[in-house]
Image 1: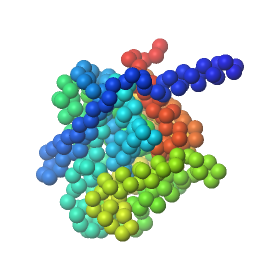
Image 2: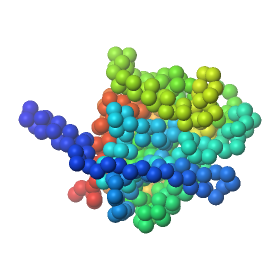
Image 3: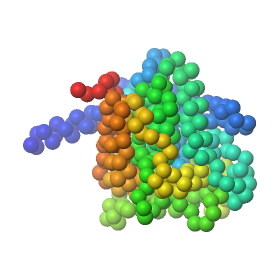
Image 4: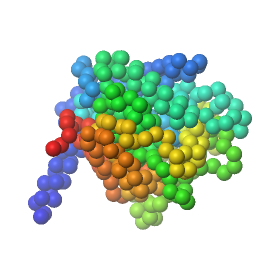
Length: 346
């Protein structure tokens, strides 16, 4: 038994590490018009230097969740490497997008006014439209008919909703911490007291409290490696040119997703039907995720009735934000394994 365990560990280490001879990574940035007045989307791209062959199975687009932009999680070089770098080093053309109101994308004009002056902005339907804009741009630029899609948290809803309506544009679907119907009494960690305004203001102290919710005190101390939270917090605050100058500094995040949670997910009304997804799908989740708990994955997995194949992976000792925790390489490796498969395992 011991030799088997050692071999498994070696195999996992080999899977988790990109080739030592991998070429340097090239990065490019784009602003893409949505067709709505004054609204453009920020897209970032990375791939191995000199890469010229693009196929439906080596082009990947990532989108963020409900609060933070894509680049400060997916392309933050924690320990010297980001997840975006990791996938690119495996020979992929990797993209991220910020939907409107997030990161380097245009902020709707309501964000120039007090939050209370307007209703919640950037509802899920609008975010899905932005995903479609990004997909169309990438397909055209790379000359491919479809691409892989990957979302985190609220981003899983964007990517899955888009796929349900546009299966022909999607090669594979990765849902990291998927959102689904919320059980009665289950706390919504992004909820606000009082009427919802156009956006909310998030401090980094509240972000860390939310991050570690549900983690046993004896496990919390080394869950986030030293310096990683501070690196992420500085990058995340810097992504909001207005909020970062407030005292104390905050990140402003559109409230459309919070409104949708109350109106749909917490009310037993799904925004879309997972049975309409017809592409290979991976669900990956961490056991201590309190934002979108395990029961959501288990219910969602059963509803994927028309995919050619599917997989559900639960990673131990991680939260909703395992992407930036000590066990993140398990997340990276499981997703990479799924992306690298050229067809379903018999």
